[in-house]
Amino acid sequence: MPRRTRSRLAVWKFASSDGCQLSLLDCEDELLAVADQLDIAYFAEASRRMMRGPYDLSLVEGSITTPADAERILRVRRLSRRLVTIGACATSGGIQALRNFADVREFAAAVYPHPEYLKTLATSTPISAHVPVDFELRGCPIDKGQLLEVIRAFLVGRKPSIPGHSVCHECKLRGTACIMVAHGTPCLGPVTQTGCGAICPAYGRGCYGCFGPAESANTAAIAREFSSLGMAEREIARVFRTFNAAAEAFRKESEAHGE
Amino acid sequence: MANRTIQVDYIARVEGESSLDLAVANAQFDAVRLSIFEPPRFFEALLRGRGFGECSISSLESAGSARSPTR
Image (cartoon, rainbow over all chains, first blue to last red; front, side, top):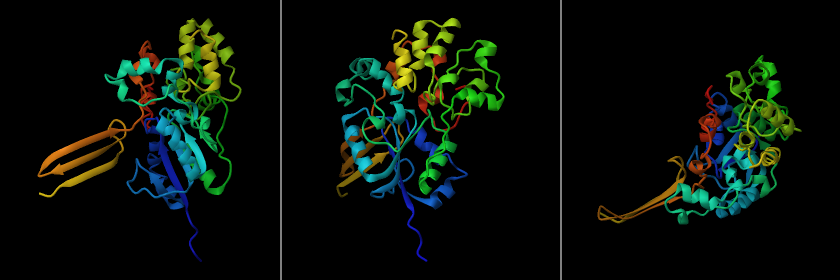
């Protein structure tokens, strides 16, 4: 019996730091099983062997911030049967979307002695603002268990099973006492999608919102709570302005607090 | 020594992504061209006005899935 043709995987990078795609290489115990199920056809961080498309599954990391990348993502989409974004940059625009609330020329002048060499757009936008996306995997960085679930799901053609509930559920499951109730520590857990395993509250630190807004996040209620804990309006705006600053729910809430 | 051209199309992880072209003639470098195509993210600009407690280091670096308890 002839061997079944294996699915071809490609991994792409746009404006990002490689951390999410390296989660795939970080799957040390599972990597051989993954490589047995599919051909890693294009993964510049992992191998100089770059096979031409088309690809069955493309994992896309990073946001669109340059004119060249706005063109390149169209080509990646054409070459990909399924396209999954990995991480906060690709899914919401990432930390670099803070430029969307500022003047990118001022940012460039503040960082580079010769900003005229840069080709950069005024905004950082998620992949879904440019091409259709089959699934968006959240996180800054992503969780490798969730990444494996997404790959497994697409290999057999089913929907990935990724929970959309908040970090609060995860604290309860871990048995972490609520740091906001018990210690008055501001925490984005109630409005943030789970996936991280609720690490920060377990160490006494409020959730940073790395996985972006949870389903039907009540950001106005949590902002009122922060206010009663003594946070100034500007501080409240800033907690929503991090890795998922451009995600709709977080963007709106930050704008409601004066920045 | 013959003229040589060394082209490295993809340098994956030297503080961003880039390519390097070297032209060598008579054991001398004739031309060296480093092209950085990693898009800038302006961390130094966007961190202004932030307290250190607001900055999650491993997230800023997005340093793989290795997780520090102090992130």
